[in-house]
Image (cartoon, rainbow, N blue to C red; front, side, top):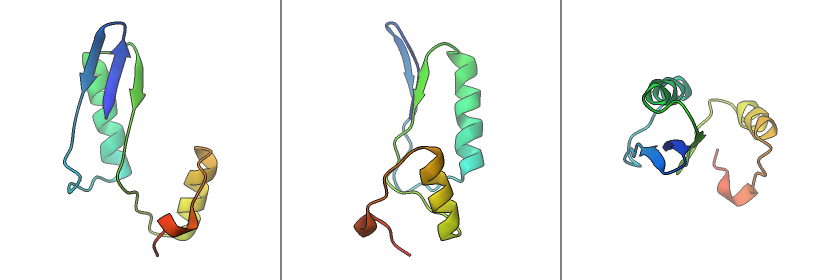
Length: 75
């Protein structure tokens, strides 16, 4: 997660791939770190996303305009 890139200032938070975070925790973490460096943009990279239901995955993909690749989706 790279947060608050503005000019030559930036802030990066790295979390081990083995750490699972729910959506609200990610959101709250971004909001907290934005207080440290409020200007700029936020980028988030994830190794995997998990959804309780397939419809939630489809809704998320629609919201972020993501293209789902069938061999990358596991049920």
